Amino acid sequence: MRRLALAQLTSAAGDGMVLAALPFAILAAGGTDGQFSAALAVQALAMVLLFLPSGVIGDRFNRRRVVVAADLLRFGARAAFALLLIAGEATFWQLLVVQAANGAGTALFNTTMDGFVPEVISGEKRLLKVNALRFLALSLGMTLGPALGGVIYTEAGAASTFALDAGTFLISALLICRLPAPFAERTSERVTLRSLIRDVGEGWGAFWKIRWYWRVATEFAVINALVFAPYFVVGPHVAEESLGGSWAWSQILVGLGAGQFVGAVAVMPWEPKRPLLAATSVVAVWILPLLALAMVAPVGILVVSTAFAGIAYSMFGSIWETIKQAHAPRHLRARLGSFDHLGSLGLVPFGYLLGAAMLATVGATAGLIAGALVLVVATLSVVTDPSVRDLRPNDDRTTVDKAIEGRLAPQVALVTAGTE
Image (cartoon, rainbow, N blue to C red):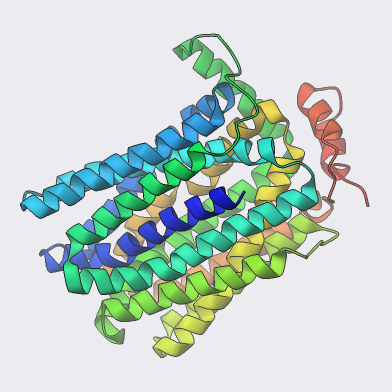
């Protein structure tokens, strides 16, 4: 899985470069905070609209080919916009098209990876280490990317930033091409609207029967929309107004990436007896950067607090991905993942727009404090749920399989999905 980790490292670094440079490129071209939030919202909306079809595609076809196709789509979109920037012909609506294409590729990539990783790795303990390695690569990418993005944008401009991001997706596709694909196409049936609706319905039935699955997805629907998405709109604004501009925001993003690196390393040997309880509890650490930014703390404090949030992010992500992969039936992994991504990210476009609205109405400080309160309430509501609190590690998927097939009551499956 070293190739997979390297693929994710390169593409994450490219995304980090664009994330650090994009708001300031828009502002430098005469744009507004609202246009930046719209650019983020369009990408998120494209992901949301394509999560469910992507889940069907990821369960029906060779998953390695699907992942490579997703990378090539994102490569093409970023490369085309870089050429437009070089030619001096780029416009804001073209940026929105590129953002939409990038969102579509991300939806296809993320949902298919939910099924692809456990095809080549078996056993819950091994899956945790592999997922931690993936988050380690992502954290390195998000550490290097923003730092490089700030320098490249300052020295060479937006065109070079987008061109380098495009190159990272091409490298990722080439690396994934060399990974094994144990299962070929899963059906010879032609994909039609009727079969698509049927497959989505099957995935929804399984998703709804697994309580801990939809409870965590619902929690992150709230947190992503009301806390995280506004934070990434308000953050650059505060950096520009009070912290010295793009370099300060790049440092904060580097702190986030560094924390993700530490969290991915720390979670590898960890074997919590109640993994989902542990994973959802650490998310509350995000209250630190929210309050620090609300108080416009010095950049050093913001970097440290965001690093702790990054640690929590990697720990949650590694454990959550492992639980999904270890407890979901093979033929439903991508579709279950699509509902997870849809639930978690479905309201993110609204969240980006909410961030701009907060800046225009209540201001950054009040908005960030409100987000911290939402985070606390959402976390408490999940960690007290028995299906989350009582889930135990288990490599045997039989219980969940039977629950989905209707041979066991869902409530029984949820509590007994694993035993010590």
